[in-house]
Image (cartoon, rainbow, N blue to C red; front, side, top):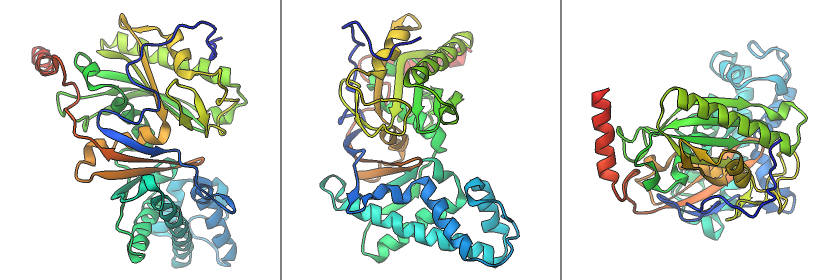
Length: 378
């Protein structure tokens, strides 16, 4: 079984700090902000489950038969079922959903106002909203309604759903964790997105020959495990994660991919520079906040090399990583943030940095020319 608490003093190569504040494209001004008031964590009021709790209360007020949702318990409804009822339901049914959207938008506005009163979030120009709830049309309407409410309260901030599917954004963003020179000779990276209920690994195709700013990066293949459906220990989670990554490495080798010796990891909580988790990982199985637990070191010990090159592992907060997938599309603003709505509420605020393009640096231009020449030969 893979150990997550290395017994040796050997450590992975240091190509970038875990949980770093200065990345290639942005400065991370804040992440995993703990939002509290007299009643506790205000972020809990807008987590994914909170919307369904609100909707359930509105359904309880209705006394008419629902044409689309029928008598299906709210907790068992899928996002697509709610979207169908929003589009095709009778007016009473649609009104119930709109009522839930309005109440939820008011709560989301309260969270955003709280954030923007803090020093790190002041003058935020745009906020992207991701996470598991974002996949529904009703959720996109809730985000749009929140923006209108913000403007009605003289808050000049734009809200938009995250561009990529949230499941893919959490992997694509990992490309922005690495120094740009690392990708001069490679076309793909390994990425990991750890959530409160599931864990996803993937191969991300950088597509630097199509766009040097990583705007064309795409998820090539994925491995998914819903650990929330099982009773598992922390050690079992790490072991399964290593198995998933090794399977993807084998796939890359079989398909002759130019896989970089790099693993980017998004994980809930406040990530320290040494790769330990200081707080915020309470939704994961076992104690991930132990000072003796170091996930990046465990991954490096299990996978010390990729393609004959020493492996580098960099981990950051999962909301940060998901937000980083938006970097190429945020160049028209200076200060922006991300909210990820899932088991909990993730958050991060960024300031754009002047930067070179991915793959540049020493030999970067030459390497890109070589990649294009190789593709023509193929």
